[in-house]
Each structure stands twice: as structure tokens, then as C-alpha cells.
Image (cartoon, rainbow, N blue to C red; front, top):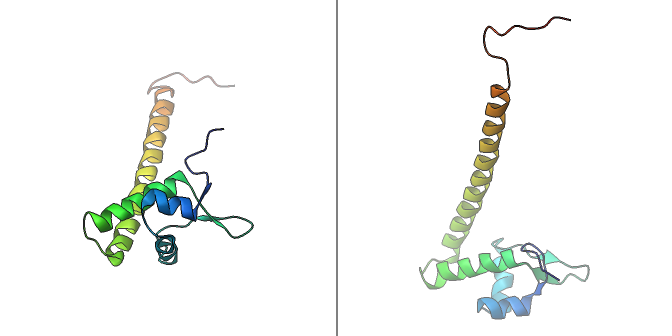
Length: 116
């Protein structure tokens, strides 16, 4: 079975070991809305590979760059916004391509129209 990138399957203890932080740190990040793990029916936090990637980035910002949690919150929001803008740009680019293709299929000026 292949686990999807966004599939919430990792428990907090496993993620804490992977990322190299205490589980309480992950709870703090959740309270600060830096990460939003999925909650199971039993209210257990489950993290995806995407969540782990984000947590590793947060840890890098804190450990390697010396950024505090307030700075991480700002960087996190900016990173999210850049991702949203990149998705919008991709959608708009696809729409431009679609419209250009549609425009090419239109009859040119002076083309004879058939009347019914």
C-alpha cells in the first residue's frame, strides 16, 4: 500500500522522533496554528508527509536561522500565501492557453459565414 503525500497516518510520537522535537513542541505549534494535524474519531492527532515536511522547515528556520516563533508564524503565512499565488498563476496560465487555443479556432476577419 502506498501512502499519499497528504494522507494523515503518522502519530504525534512518531512525528516528534522524525522531526527531532518533543511531542509538546508539536502541540505548541498546533496551538500557534503553524500546523493543523488531522484528528481521528478518537481525537488522535495524525500527521501527513506534507505536515512532516512543513515541520522540518519550521525546525530549520528555528535551529539554523535562529528565527523565533513569531518570525516563524510570519514566514509560515508568507510561504502559504506564495503557494496560493503560485497555484492561482498556474490556473490563470492554463486559462490563457485555453483561450488562445479557442481564439485560433475562430474564423478570421473576412471569413464567410454561412447563414441558415
